[in-house]
Image (cartoon, rainbow, N blue to C red):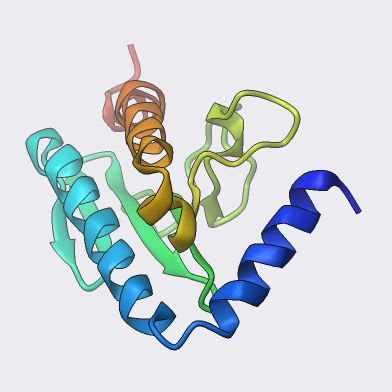
Length: 150
């Protein structure tokens, strides 16, 4: 087990025994939703539920906020479907229905779209960094899928 995994496990253990954690988790979730909304609305994305979508004649892109079933974190998931309902025929799309933000991370398999609630509360720079990567790298990549073949 890596040092990072041990740290996460210790923090999860602490949170599990903190009677205030459920309330703190909702505060963090609200901060994440607000930050995503502020970043995605100017790019033409509209929120419904926990998914921001943007349609075009080429298809629909989506940025989905997926809560983990254990309640420790959320993951930003990227989607794009053609008008026929298929994933895009693009060499950078891995053929799956959705993608994580791992391809935009700092390497070594990091997923900047995975946000631990405790990190959002205790280290706001984690959320800021994830939003910056989404806006500066992931959204332009999704936007290119909306563009007509040139």
